[in-house]
Amino acid sequence: MSTTPSRGMWSSRTGFILAAAGSAVGLGNIWGFPTQVGQGGGAAFVVVYLACIFLICAPIMAGEIALGRRTRLSPVGSFATLAPGGRWWLVGGLGVLAGAGILSFYSVIAGWAVAYVWFTATGAVTGTPDEIGRFFGEFTGNGLVSAALALFVIGTTAAVLLGGVRTGIERVTKALMPLLVLLLIALAVRAVTLPGAGAGLAYYLSPDLSRLADVTVFTSALGQAFFSLSLGMGCILTYGSYFSRRDGIAASALWIVALDTSIALLAGFIIFPVGFSIAGFDPTSSGPGLIFTVLPRLFADLPGGQLFGGAFFLLLSVAALTSTISLLEVPVSHCVDALGWSRAKAVGAVAGVVSVFAIPSALGNGAVAVFTSVPGLGIGFLDLMVNAWNEFALPVGGCLTAIFIGRIWGVERALEELRAEGAWFPAPALWAFLISWICPAAIACILIATLASML
Image 1 (tube, rainbow, N blue to C red):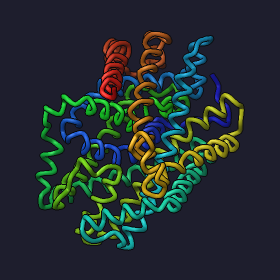
Image 2: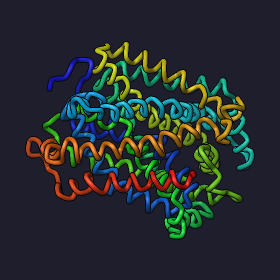
Image 3: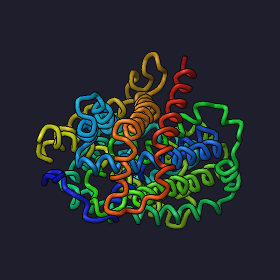
């Protein structure tokens, strides 16, 4: 199937891997993963998370890439083409909505990271842990500033997408992702040598198996795994539609999973040693502000810490940008494919809609009472968006995608695409079993248990 100029193609397999890994690597790893580990009880969460990654998410990732490459279409078009006349296109529609919905709150947190480039570089974030926490609370409580920063992130993302697949998305991710990895390694080395770091490492690496009785650990781990790997939201499927048939899917998917998981784990080796080196640190109550209240303490203890801190949040902002790019690309790609819009028109329209829906999350941290504590729910609008999309929409999308691949498209046809041009694909029988049975069953069980716990 041919591609239109508005769609484009990756220039190389490396470009695809770095772009897809860039989609996966970002705030989901450096903000989301440590936050969920803290709230999920430490190492017990990590064990469940890794099981979700390798038994559920990796098989689905290979399947999503195959779906996209087979059809050369966005999520809605992919499902509609492979199951004409049915309603499976709604699964693709859920992915398009998820991409836009996640971007609406993700842009707010990315905006905070942008602001902290300036705050840390100028030494504005200093003092005791309580003072740093108050600074973060006052900053995020300024709704006008948070909204402006979120709109800046969305606008910057739109500008990159206007450049297309190769000159926009691929060029940015190939240039900047390696820098983030090197800086994270340097910070981890320093973090584990801090006084009190041993307690943080024990919390992070020694599982309390009694926590496995809590169903929310499984729900949060599964949602975080999908969020971190950009699954169930159409990102990987869309990126797969730009992937050459000359390149193997299996090796590429494994590289993406390995890079993403390594960086998530690396973030934990920074956050928890630093956190436990601070008197009174409570990992279960740090919430979304974890990296904005813990890491400034590390930078304060480093020689040249202001420069180091500014560089870290700059690269964190870049990592967030590589994720916002993929989130915005999903609905943009849909508009190009389904509506025949030019890339410029699609980018402008979708960015405008997402900007409107980002405002409540920006105002939900103390600026406006109704968004700070949603009536009847008692949580902020940003937290509501995180829970709704991460813990429900993404797993539901992933479950339906697995069912579609295993039952509707069929594992044999999927394997034809996965092994096209003689590509290496290990253990096809195992993959077929996982995608057909284990993935949908495990996700469904976790979702049912979650709903039951809420009643």
